[in-house]
Image (cartoon, rainbow, N blue to C red; front, side):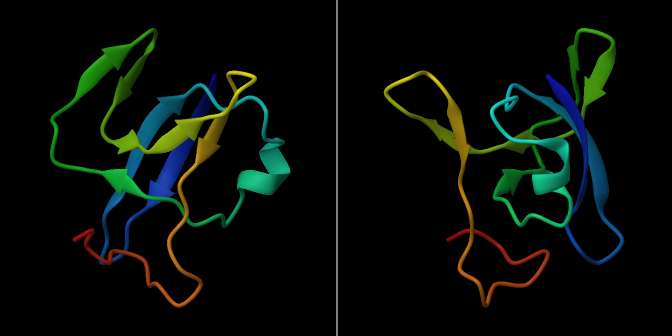
Length: 79
């Protein structure tokens, strides 16, 4: 697991733990992702997770992060 600090724009920065170890840490820096921020906090191991990062699972069981379009801005709402 990695501990992610995610910038959702407009001064919203949240922390979560994610099972995405098939990504290198460097490849996650400044990577846009899709997440949910209004689920409430949840204890995951030693981390208080504040959001949920969305992904799909491939045939090998690896989690693949869902990505917004290249023109999406931080904080855009999913609809």
